[in-house]
Length: 470
Image 1 (cartoon, helix red, strand yellow):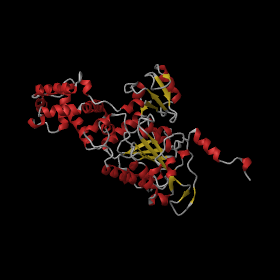
Image 2 (cartoon, helix red, strand yellow):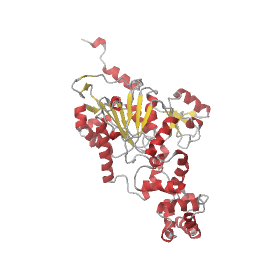
Image 3 (cartoon, one colour):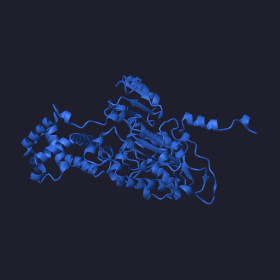
Image 4 (cartoon, rainbow, N blue to C red):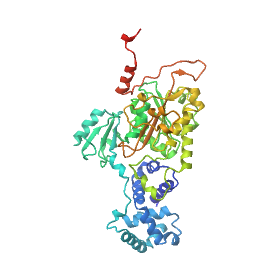
């Protein structure tokens, strides 16, 4: 029964809004994750009809050994929709089997009531916006090059073209050079390239934070990923750094920390030190962590921008994500993270990102952060558009900021419109004047080894030519 209790634990956390489906499932040991994920998702698909059947059969009233509704849901799901309850012949299983005839009868009645000719017609359908989001694959440059990856996929029979037009079409992304886009139906879970860590499944928008932070590929580089699990963004930072320097990856949850270490090992990340601690408890004056020049902050958020996973299935039982009290608490925590990052004496660049579409978690946090003592005394401001994915068209909401011009410094992704999940990214930079100590001096911004050609062109354009010098 342990397998069922693990699935119940996931459902309980989702009911309590303790994370997204993907996030909660990531905390399960990898050896059990695939099976548990399948049961959780399938149970959620049929949750409304299963709940109706359980109530009609009065299962919870008559069987005290079935201690929760979620336990009843997973067991009845397997009884009616799978190969039966996969557990030993114990008292809990027998408690359900005693009502098999009644449960089956009520299930048939529910199908007739809904006019369903098959069980599949009873399932909740997915978010329609997901159909416009390709299956993104990030080439792990710690192992090989994008050029080599392109050849490998072409050898598998894929052809360059519109990824939404055919399951055999794929293309190199226009904004993230190491990212490839495939048809949404394509799966890579069993592909040797995925199993070996050569490719990483990661949504395009989720690649923006590391790309925009752009840590240098130098042996003396020190970078922090403040909320690292499950590790996609950490491994992306590592690839950008070419496994050079030091990358500290913080994760306070023990189970998620285990997931993080597994991911980093699979991704061949040798410059990363995973730290099982809360970033907020780390002293900025620590001899090691205090040397960080780049910090990535992707803290807990509402997840309201995610549409290509199964979280929409929770809508029938949960309140919408715009619950003001919950969002206010999240925003307060997010601001606290930004303020703490700004206290690190050597930090020059801080990326703050969320997978939320709510201004309260995005523009409002940025707006408040810019007015804090940490920002004003530390000399932090928003980076200009030229440093923040300049060719991306969708920017922040001007009406949600004190200075509407700041919106141009922010990146937004709209689910269903930008071929990505909903996302938000901002970049705080410290002014060249170092105000962190009494020896105030000019300090050059670190050379950005990951600048794209457009950014370099913009810099050249701003620099006056020698012919114009007086």
